Image 1: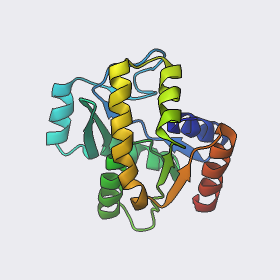
Image 2: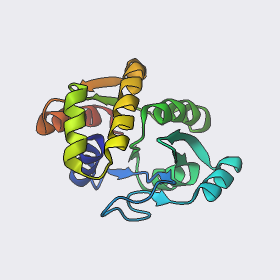
Image 3: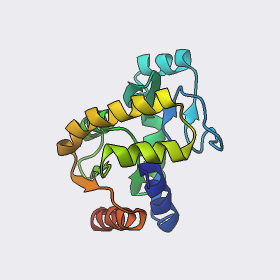
Image 4: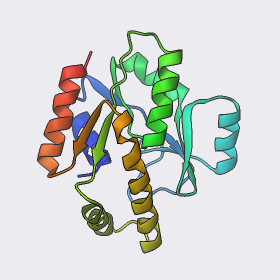
Length: 180
């Protein structure tokens, strides 16, 4: 189970207490993805203009595409719920934590979870089964995963992915301990 699937399951179970911040990207939508539900899909020029206008808490270039967490999206969701969920990569998480701690009231708690693949072979198999990435893109993702493992120690919680239900149970437990 990947991080997106875990996030979706958590949001479904706690839909009355938790809401997801939709992030922005310049990548093309995958099959079944919907603009403004899965991501705010935009082109590179618009994304760069938003970045120049300081519209993001953080943004990164990953596999040639821009991804960012918009301040407006975060603040809008904070008005809806005390508990928000943001599904981002490791570099984005590090930047986001720093920026949110600087710009948001100190009573707002940021909790980060790093979901490690059991091993890179398992990750490769999962990506192949997903069927939405080229072999070249899968190899890029595996290289990125190797690099991201170096950031794991900077997260509040590090979980080694084993099986979908146990992965979800661990993330749920962390959420329940930290919700406001």
